Image 1 (cartoon, rainbow, N blue to C red):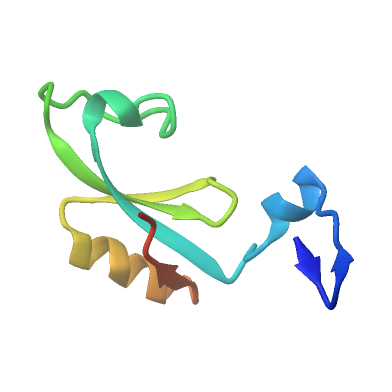
Image 2 (cartoon, rainbow, N blue to C red):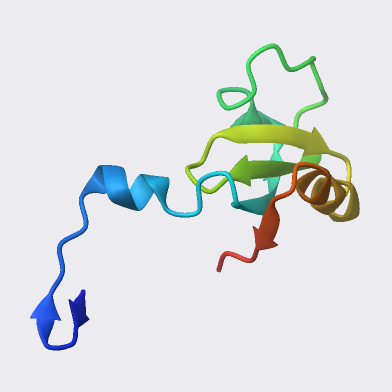
Length: 85
């Protein structure tokens, strides 16, 4: 990154900490993708889609059956949801 004509280096640790405790993202995922991220998740039919809320650093926070419930979870945890593309 360049700022004011100077090159600024960001370490992987600094990058991972950006938005920590303040930002989260919501993502629709198939149950097969979620098993490794949410240990102890109950057995669900293959192909089932759920909405997951993740902290800015990728830490899983909660699962929901729809995007509205996942967004509500972000607000309940005082997190600002952002969109990822």
